[in-house]
Amino acid sequence: MANGEFTIEYVELPNGRTPAREFVDSLDDKAAARIDAFIERLRVYGNRMQGKFVKKLTNDIFELRVKQFDRIFRVLFFYQPGMLIVITSGFQKKTQETPPAEITRAEQLRKRWMKYGNRCTGSQKEREAIRKELGL
Image 1 (cartoon, helix red, strand yellow):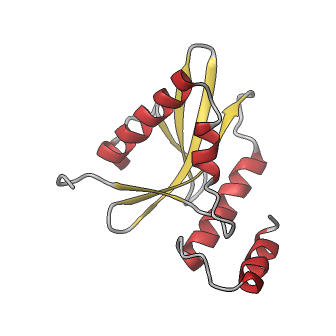
Image 2: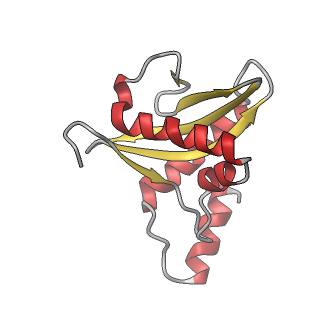
């Protein structure tokens, strides 16, 4: 790891799914490649990235803005000590404002990550409890 670069991690759900990665992978190759290029830029520059690309939404949640022609994509993430960026989710933006539901979802995914990291707890029962707690 080069000096001053961040590590990127994706929030993983108890069922092993990673919402942000699934979102990117569901897009056409060009859009996915563009988002991945921006995520790579975020990894290199992190909180030094220009304001037109990164916007603070809440105390903890930030959005990475990716534009491809007339389409606008958002990738939500948060910072952690130790030069870590954790990506919670992504969506295609259709309105000026970031939908509150997307911010709420990112906050919930952050809470889950803060509590469990990406360690999927052992038993099915524990996983069910986590899913229920997060309303998933």
